[in-house]
Length: 121
Image (cartoon, rainbow, N blue to C red):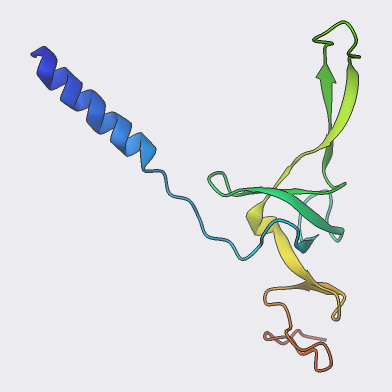
């Protein structure tokens, strides 16, 4: 193989790696969500950030994990810092305040709060 051919192969590999698919989401930063599965099931909170490439959501004060840090400077302290862990996007629903539960579509009219998808009683 000539060096020109290897460069073409490398470019094709780089292009395919750059074309990763990102998923669209109805959930945005700052929305209220309810967790529907996992160890935080039934709890709700505010979305801090989204990672759409990996389909992850970080919710305030849910799925807390501990990060062990070393001091980087002399005036800085090290220790165990609690931080929010990721939750998969499929495990959360938008939270409707008037319904007081997680719904697939948030109600626009609060006076007539009807689910778009009827639940069974």
